[in-house]
Image: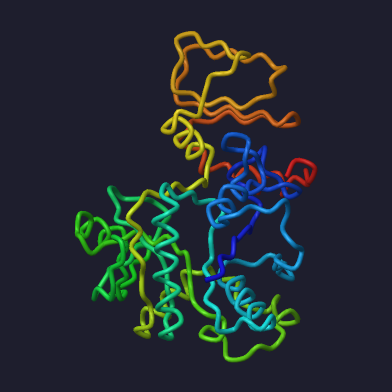
Length: 315
């Protein structure tokens, strides 16, 4: 199994720190390390000083996970690894049990070599999560060390809120966390060059591939028996740091009748918070973000407005 760490997009919801020149995947967010570093360390048993340039797959232009998956498969085929399973590892996800995750990868590797199937990952939800699709697990295929592999019985789009609500609490319902795994030859017809056709490929998300595979009866899901943190917004970063006792109020921060705030500003800048709670304050030097924590999912709209105003230096 070849883990392929996906570093796509600009991380616009984590503006103003995440920029085109240095997106969130490479920012020191957790204990001075980037999400890319943490994911790489989880996959590598022995770290090397730097990655060989040949290990990088650079897509011709930014599309989405669907085209990027096809591009990865083609690169595997071109490099003589068409029958070697690969798994897409999203950099904005952190898994709480690396050992169990590696066992899940081994299980995915086994079935990818044996059957022509599309393998994805899922996790049992404790509550409704907005912006995520769901899977319904069917027949149990295999269990190894507490990690279970199922046929996918149904795919539930995130917009089907009533159906999701009615199934919440069911043992068969899973949050869809991707982690696509398969061989390049199982995904593609041949090993031709896709670079010249890449810009014409549908800019669809990976979920479209999942739906097609599920309807064809070719989708299976690994149920992850551990917690997964999704670093999609500043609020999610704050929750992770606080939950893991990694966040400390800075010496340059004064709080008066204030609590539950997340502040990320240069050390030389004094910050004073009075009578506020649940805020996120992010200072990048040339831009300042102040938002309610549960509203930070809207930060991407700021980037779109800056684009419309032609302020390229700010995004």
